[in-house]
Image 1 (cartoon, each protein chain N blue to C red):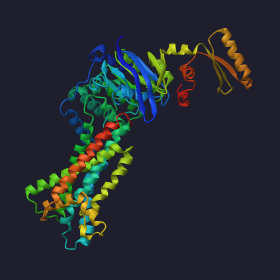
Image 2 (image 1 turned 90 degrees about the horizontal axis):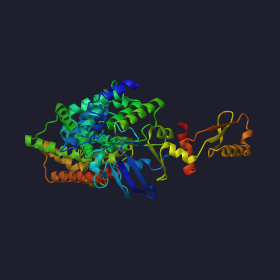
Image 3 (image 1 turned 120 degrees about the horizontal axis):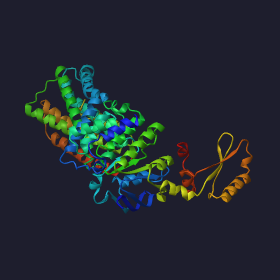
Image 4 (image 1 turned 90 degrees about the vertical axis):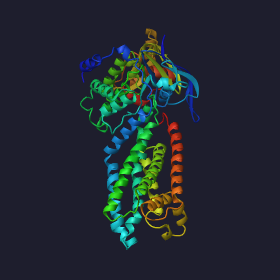
Length: 300
Length: 279
């Protein structure tokens, strides 16, 4: 099994806070790996360490077969990073941004121009290509941001919360691009706080909480941790009153319904019971004992 | 965009997908990165209307203001223009260089520098780009000051060699103040803060021999004005362009500028390393 990312025992402190408290990551080449966690769980620090920006206090990190501590230049030749804020040059046009990054990636000016034209077309920016990035919408900026990372199609692509702040349509467009990258053979490592995103995109998901990986597996494996169906009680307006996981058996289901009944919430006017498959929200709740941040709920 | 058009663009790509996924970036040799970043900063300068106006309009306005409005009050004989030209050159260079702090800070806060850091190149070259663009911008401003000065009665007595010396010391001063502004840009949390911190430096020329002789200032202010870096720089330029005696001032001027460049470069380099991965 060829690993694109092999990190063991990463620790990182900032001041008195353990941002990462012993992190292990193994990402197979050519797959999409999602690091899922709420704000402040250490996602960006992890990406910064994997992309040579920050040195870990402890632990070893191999990216694309090279050690980030002893051979950062070799790692840099093989990775690209799309950070959280769209790190684009606002004064330059979209095309000029792409040409600049092409030349910085070692292309001749002519090759950089040709590559810029290809990418503008592929990311639906051909018409906006000659406009200054300062005039772009959030979605356009993000697409350019991603295009800049693909000027040279490096083997390992890091995306830090690639779709944060995007509308549904732009988000789906970006998902399609990310999938096409993996189809082309690249390894994609992305962080997200959107459970749906990890669910839809990733071959494997690791759940990060307080600087530790608390669960890892495919989306189905993680959902299986919760067990079977979830019983919900909602009032007349659809507001969630009670939510209980079950083990999937008839007996377990009956017990859950009885439990709801006992909590007397069922007496609320117009309240209805429903049964659904467990989501990654449930997984997060189950593993960490906490709900994901309220903003994450809205994303569903 | 529809899936079909993008799919076609993707499929039309010359190399097979698997091969393209293993492409590597070469290390950039020589000064390629510096050249690219200098080009970028030039484009920034030309497109930043505000800083371009600052670089061209401000010298004209200040020159006219000091000679026509203040000039006769300060020196009724009409010779003030010969005295004030060096001061206005430095004042303009300060304003012109201050936009470096904002540019550097903007690069730090947008995260574009972190992106350069993850590529196999000297990411510090992006700062070199800003510094060289500032030097070029401010040399243009200096030329404008001198041209306007000549139009309103500035009569330098400099030989060609004096001119070379004067431009050398002006360039050194521009570099010093630009390095300082670049470091301030690295230290500031936001571009707005960078602009604010830098502002205080712009007042230094007033507390020097730039506009009035130090001997006319209050007693307590004189030692400050006499011993701050701007005064020897001003005196050196003045001596080279007019008939004033040069003396020790030139050494002090060069020493101050070199010390400021060294200090700002060390501080900047430390900040630049420390801020990796932080926004």
